[in-house]
Image (cartoon, rainbow, N blue to C red; front, side):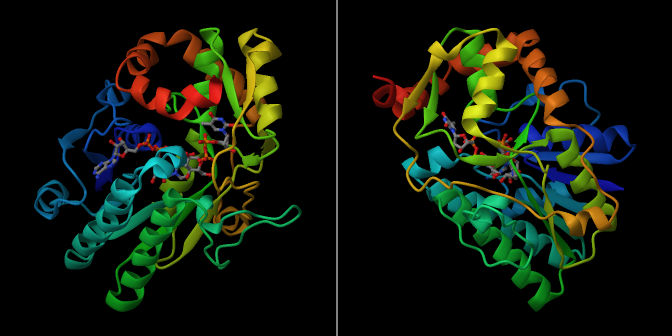
Length: 328
Ligand code: NAD
Ligand code: DAU
């Protein structure tokens, strides 16, 4: 099968593209190479690469020609950046999704939309989000992802497009851009830099290893029922302050690096997914955080040549904007 993987030079998309290629599928990666897209993530992979924007109908049609499916990872993905400004989020996450859906409709092709647990918003203690729960996004990022999901749902209903949605929880592993908490805190700790913990640090996230996220998306691509939504939850809920303590231990650093800084605006307290629907299809996460986090820390320790160029480039301007006042 020939598959178009959009956003395949980013964190999760590159793991997915490599996984699919290793399984013998023909893979075309289309990626705009924004700040988080990195050709190095695809080094050695047997994939065709097209540098383009998912909002560009002509480029999408050219890259997708002959493909039996599209798996869309392309998005603006960082909540803090969406608070600074959301227009690119709306363009890529909503309009870009629409362009891909339109191509899938015209070419009677399956589309898998990779979405997020953040579309459900804050989840009270003791509850977990199910696929039919209302969408209550809190950030401009999650609102843009919810907009993309709604376009998918409408295209299935109105045009009969063969599409599924996955909603994954917080994902970690090698090759994650060092703006997200795990790679940011690990690389800062390895450099003896402060770890800026927002608010009281008691927010909870449900951690999922990137390979487990990819096996879920692959299963939905191959066996998901058209029009269905599948939650992909790691089932490992951890408070940020506890995660931070583990990172300190694994990097051989101590509490003196931790700074409690001004909270994120609109910060969701807790996410939690009920993933029983996907489990009934045969999926289960295979990597515990207890194994996956030490391996991930080791990867960042051993791969400075991957993240050091990132952290010394344009990243610096973003870091100053996001953290300078918080840390001073
Ligand atoms: P990422 O930021 O690492 O990668 C995004 C990729 O999309 C980059 O390669 C970027 O260049 C590309 N891209 C951005 N705009 C584009 C455009 N207009 N056209 C083409 N390519 C474009 O993100 P990620 O963490 O790998 O997330 C991938 C997907 O998974 C996203 O849709 C995200 O919402 C979803 N998701 C992420 C997580 C997580 O914890 N990281 C959890 C659940 C769902
Ligand atoms: O839940 C899935 C989502 O997970 C994905 O859809 C998003 O693309 C991805 O970015 C991630 O969103 P979060 O906002 O949960 O991830 P982030 O790593 O930015 O933050 C995780 C938690 O850590 C959150 O409670 C905020 C906190 N945090 C984050 C940063 C960057 C800090 O305390 N300090 C920080 O500097």
